Amino acid sequence: MSESAVAPESPAATTRPAPTVSVVVPTRDRPELLRRAVTAILGQRYAGPVECVVVFDRSDPVPVDVPTGDGRTLRYLRNDRTPGLAGARNTGILAATGELVAFCDDDDEWLPGKLASQTELLERHPETPLVSAGIIVSYGDRDIPRPAPDRPLWRADFLRDRIMEIHPSTVLVRRAALLDRIGLVDEEIPGGYGEDYEFLLRAADAGGVRAVREPLVRVLWHARSYFFDRWQMIISALDYLLDKHPDFRTDPVGLARIEAQLAFAHAGLGDMPGARRLAVRAFRHNWREQRLYAALLASTRLVKVDTIVTLAHRAGRGI
Image (tube, rainbow, N blue to C red; front, side, top):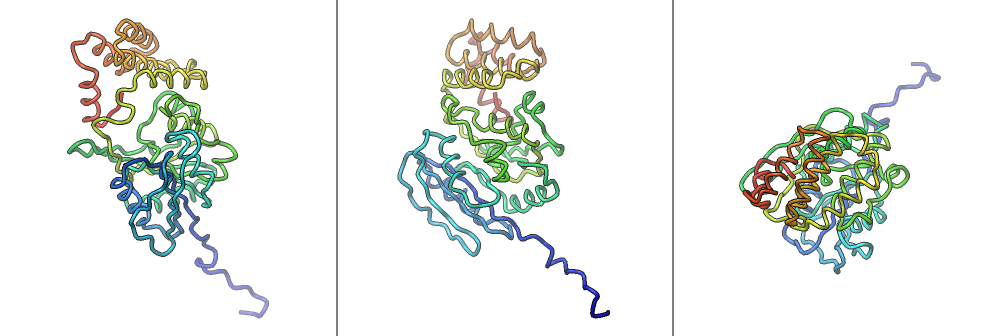
């Protein structure tokens, strides 16, 4: 080789260092579940730095006794914004230092290869602001795998279907896109119900969503979740969603889904005429929407609302 020749750089010299990931974990009064979630986050098989930001919702932080290790940091914050998941997530987002931001609820658990698989997917698709992954729904003594779609997802996809596999605990998003194009989590949604879904509608509109098909997060479904019987708040939140995103009314399938959910919530309140009226409206938009039949069944009082919800959860489904 002549003195003027330039040797090619080795792959190690041109490989970009793995980006720092900040993981926002909202929590309240669940120390054992929190410890499990944080342990799984800090134990990721991921070459880059991981910053875990635990946000205590309207309560003083209580440290978690877990080892950190090299390249792993653990921080504690208090949410003094809007009480609930939305305010806690935003507290963590604004304090995060990583190039990438991830969400994990305190009762969920990442599998060891989650971050490595997702960052590889982001690297292959620089135009994509947010990636997700499949989930394993854990309900009682059952584990139900729910692989994620392996195609790009756009706003029209999320209007039509919630796509429950794109769970908040799977989210990994570029922080710059989050702050500049997507925006923070909406803290105005009544009770915080559906804040993750509303966020995904905006993320899909800001460049689409991709997902690792493999289930990489174990999602714990409780026998009675926070939202299980707060029917009036759910109704207010769904009405808010329709008002904020009027293009639901241009998609009969998506609109029928929301109307059927409203119908079921009215049945949960005991407003059986209202439940039937909304179910009929959903039928006119999309007679294939299964939730409307669940709402009609509940409105007859032949089967209790709680029973229908429990049966759906045992099948790994939501209402």
